Image (cartoon, rainbow, N blue to C red; front, side):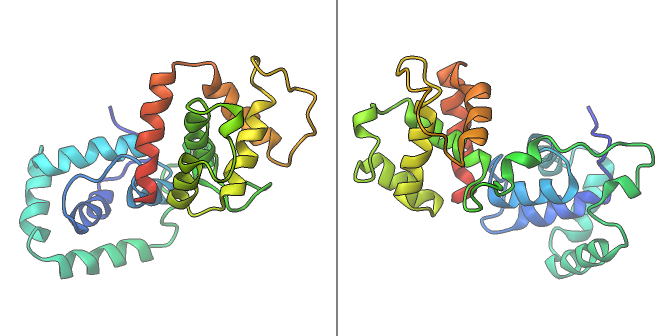
Length: 214
């Protein structure tokens, strides 16, 4: 199924990402895949599927692209630069009259107003770890918290603060009267989306999101 904002010109961008070392299919939430998704306003999962089509050269057009650019990265880089210099590029609304721009996945990968060093996707990763710990171990010197803070490039105290905020939504802890945190609203949104869902699905998503920091 095609995406309304997809343009065949974007195959060049996807090919350049595919050929970035190590060449091949990039993880769904790798930084490069996410950054291209934000640039095009097209969800990562769609670009991920398109990348498989690109690898298979699933159409004659893709076959011609490989013939033209597969062994000529300099030409690919030049043509990608030209494409990005086009007026209005990365604002697909200019190319698709009548298609409304509604941010959905983008929000998860943008800095939070209440804490610029965090993104909602990081809260999802922390929530997965939250369910693997007990409140007594949600402290900065717990190895799992130290590893998570190192992975995401933030202080362990920030991870602890997020976990303490999640505790206020946990029905098993009865801490709803705790002092509100600047992180409360964003943590509540993530808890509502994943806190009462399938833990295996949350675990799978968190594992995929960690590729962003790889």
